[in-house]
Length: 107
Image 1 (spheres, rainbow, N blue to C red):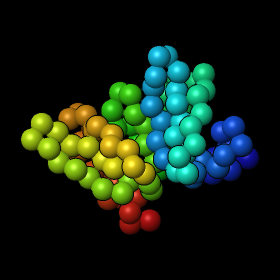
Image 2: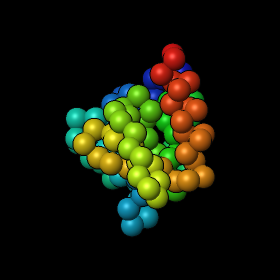
Image 3: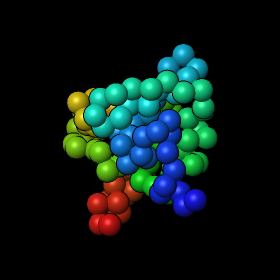
């Protein structure tokens, strides 16, 4: 099975907007607003999905670059808009994320 055919709990990978850590679990937020809690570490999902357009923007967030709608710059940092959610981008990840976003948008 090719990676692009992977599914998490019956959803297509492309349906995932972002994921975040909450109380030791990973919460998947789908593009349609549905949420699902799974018992898999975010770093494992990052390894699995990194080549499919997902990027770890913060220690607590993994986002699907295809669902990033806006970049918001603040005095003290940068956030991205995914669906109706605003997610922080860590200072250490800012440049790499911008580069990944540019590359993904060219595809």
